[in-house]
Image (tube, rainbow, N blue to C red; front, side, top):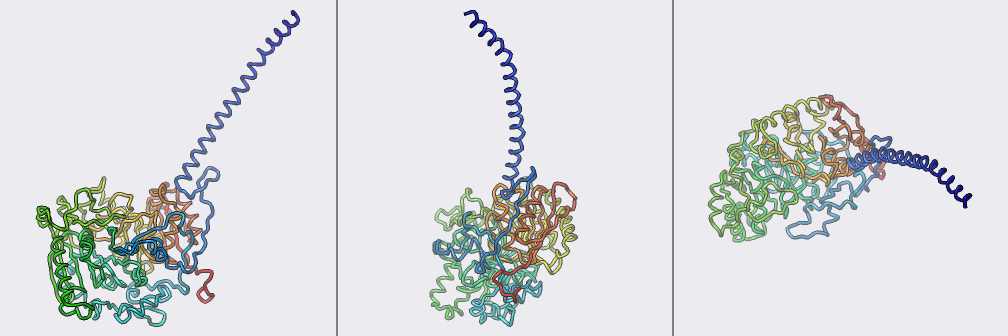
Length: 601
């Protein structure tokens, strides 16, 4: 027993020596594992955050980079692809009030990840101002509209060009004579009072084109319909235009925006569905603004025989239209021949009378309906009454053009943090930036650049800085950003709401210059960079430019995607030489589909 006891005693003493060494070894290994895991975990967390910031980012050696990407060519039948107004999808949607022509964007899994090719034989567009009267046939190769509308002098194909003689259904003597008569009826068109206009059902935008020469900036609006490529013709000519239709959703503009609205036999059934189409025109017109109508039922006494109707039916339509306009606080302003002009009430006295009548139709909209909400917002059958607190938004109170461009708009106070001082500083900032852009890209300000889009503007500062150049700017305000678009319109500029996670309402190859200011930084959590840049490529003309102003963090990643789009880019310093922000100056190359003939190459 003693031997056994000694054995156990020795073993116990030996174990007491081994245990501290083993415990120490385990402790050191555990500590090493913990520290290593903590360090590696920290790096892993940082890498994931970087990848999350730009969903197309990859990380190599702890620095964010984009994988080398390339995009295939779309097939040639996608040369005029408009993703959110795609005729291929129309059968999926209802025909009531032509809702199938509204925006219906494809889901993520159905988005095209390919480069939209130009038509075979595409050429660089004819430069402004010559482009207002002619364009290359191969750039918009549509024979249907030429055959159907040449007798109305919309356009005429001669050789390898389309010519635009300035005709229209309601102005057989030419658009200039038509506008001359309109100016006689509305003297405010001559003195700078009227600066912004919208043309619903614009044809090939001859009306908007003529107004440009008279200092009036017009948004020409038309759906993608059987008059193929109305909006594409307009933009090819260098005239502002956008795809859209007054149907069940509000137009993507704030309330009290336009000084004038126009319809020349646009075939919109103004008195149907409770007058909702007129209610939308009323919403976007500023107080004291004008609505101009030519075509049925105006001048029905002399025109009804050519409209395949009866004089009684047209008289009834005209009376119904007049009653409806009166109920919305419009008054007849002038009328002559085929043109009738109504003016929206310049004050709220008329609306106050309507509110006291419980049987009035249409009723006033309640306060829960935001007047400026206009991105996928249904049109409601009620009158949007201008806010009584706005005293200087009406046409009579707005400074005349060009003074209004730099006058501090009243509605800047509705923008969080907005004030007169900020507005003035913004103007000075963009003046310096535009000057710097012209040094880096001399094409800005020349006839090489006509159609410009500022993809995420605040107050239209870039457009204001370039106002004396032979170009126009579509100012885009994000539907998720602060509502600054009313300020843009109050300055006498034009723009639209948009969400860049979706395709823009335009045809391919319609802009010469795209400007981006921090868009990828602000929208990286919602929109994948790849899809935004594919959309930029779709709407940018071959040989067109992009000025991308972004944080240094994103610039290299954007350049990598741009290379996959076949763009050439160079990195430049900003005017302040900031280390936190850089510029990319990019140009889209002209290429033809691999199926194109050698002659077109």
